[in-house]
Image (cartoon, rainbow, N blue to C red):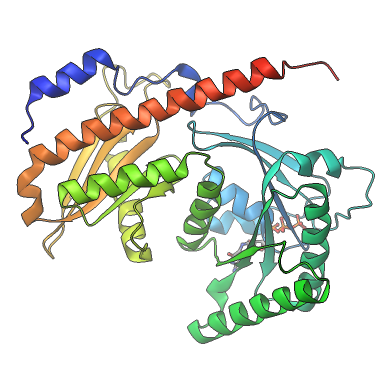
Length: 371
Ligand SMILES: Nc1nc2c(ncn2[C@@H]2O[C@H](COP(=O)(O)OP(=O)(O)OP(=O)(O)O)[C@@H](O)[C@H]2O)c(=O)[nH]1
């Protein structure tokens, strides 16, 4: 199998690479005031946890690019904050950040309808604080939420672990895991409710890694994406492949081999380098225009490390990039890799179309109505 440019061009004519339907694109320059946070039609992710556990900081750091140090000045929330994350077809949901003092009996919030449309409930526990009251709240939240919606995926972020030693981290995780499961056993819910645990901190990549896993569970076609990546690594001599949402550095998919956090961090750093360089040299013909993003269909990059490893990035569509790690020897077959990449990109675009068609058919079966 060999790659030649004619083949790539023939794909380009049948499918306009890099140009997805407009609504898949993230508009980088929407101000906070313009964002339509009441998009109740979108899949919903709910953040809960005790006061000061770090919910708002997580949301600001991951989705609004706030620097971790700035979160010191956020202040406590007294009402629910809603936000819409709309980067691509895969990273497209509404976030509801409940204040720490929230109670299910609180008539201020329409908990029933919020949780009915909820796909993922992230409960944040401050690992530097006493955990007993957080565990009580966790149990009460998951059992009540499960009664309202049995399809919610429950995720616990054991947060602020930057202040703990490696040993304490593991010990805290073990203790929280054990006690949360014991509580479920006591209430007879252990067969029904499954909780996933993640160690997180806004001061390193762990929060992005954890959010990646949460977002992946919200993607209906995740298995297909994973399969695509398995095929490309097998056929191209690649060691690890990540499909990144460039804007947030969440990886929306990866192949089925285990993720090692150093590889993930390396790929995140590569994206930063590409965006920074594009901002300087790659702003197209009109560098002054705000709508000329630093990441477009021409974006690609190759970085050689001094240990014989190569990082290779190719743009898949607006704000989605494939980042691969491979041995330098295997990169001799770059044409095959590029050819396989074109096929992969075509497959992912088809998946977008499929998702779009499914959405249209659901909407035609349930036309929107005024409440
Ligand atoms: N050390 C450390 N501090 C963090 C981390 N995440 C958040 N914080 C700090 O925790 C404090 C509280 O964070 P918030 O985001 O306001 O907490 P919250 O859960 O939204 O609080 P409420 O709005 O009262 O419910 C802030 O001072 C943050 O800087 C973390 O990963 N590590």
